[in-house]
Image (tube, rainbow, N blue to C red):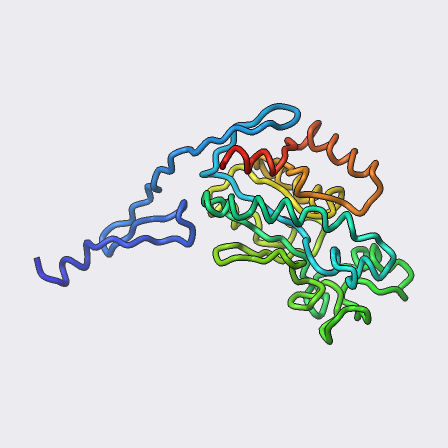
Length: 265
């Protein structure tokens, strides 16, 4: 066989996600995806115990950012106690390396406004700046320890991950502009391209952005699990209790990241 003829039959992989690839050559497109064996792990959960398939699971971490968590960030500047927002840091630092080692995708969904705010409606801006004179989305925050002080603006200090949390090579980052990380973002396309069925949710605020994203995931057909120890809220405790109730009653399950770590180790 000549080298030219051999080249027409050489197949290469086509697809950005390992779980969703064709094999193509000049003469054929093979649409049969590689079979991924299930990798089940059992964990306690509510309202029922769970068996998760790690081969089809991702973890989505929401809004663990300076403007929400840092004592010089936006929420702290308007009088919010950000101590509860820092509570998920230690559990996430234990959980995420274990999940990465198991090949479970880590997706950071962070608020990151456009500098011109053209995709933010007056109704959305009003939530955080009800009198038009306060510091809201995209406004300058004098207390921020940097010259790049626009509140939750993409690439600004306030939109950056709250240390010591850091994204690692292979992690996925998605900017959001609403309470839900699915609205006007590529999150759904990314998860479906990776052939994800089950999404573990973590971050803040549990009763706001985390719950809104989890609910949209549930409506879109994903299995949804709120990692209780890896989530928190700066809202009153009754908001936290209502969130746990609603997730267990209507939208999925609650579990502990610590239990998942123990099961995997």
